[in-house]
Length: 181
Image (tube, rainbow, N blue to C red; front, side, top):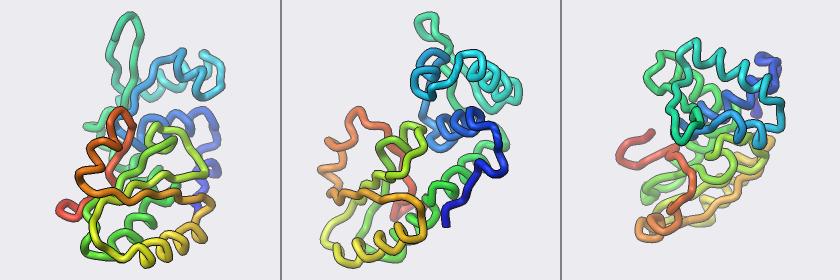
């Protein structure tokens, strides 16, 4: 089930800014960089950034004369917005799929465009674990893809391989065996 947020949030730029900052709390951006990334005018982007900042949903830091914005994870609505955006992508279905497969899985991470805060039809997924049923994983992911309007591209790594893989790559954890994010 692909939830269409654009039916309730009609401003495309507002939705893209929400996706940019609230799906991955570590994402940052500044006005000119967002202009290039989102393809909208600086005036439209500035107006939305100001709204989110005024509401306390975005905070900023000045670095080399640039105002870098990021999500205010302490805002009372942050978790709700984060959850809503993850559900719109299908992260909740992927998490259920992961937890139902095999007890030897250790964690699951989202990387790629979605981790950068860019809505994409491809979900890049990193599964961490050893000696589990790869066929069950492939079958389960295939079923989830049919329910989503997105393709899931995944890779399976061990704990040791994970450290090298994530160097300088944006990512966020969607599930951990010992924490069940």
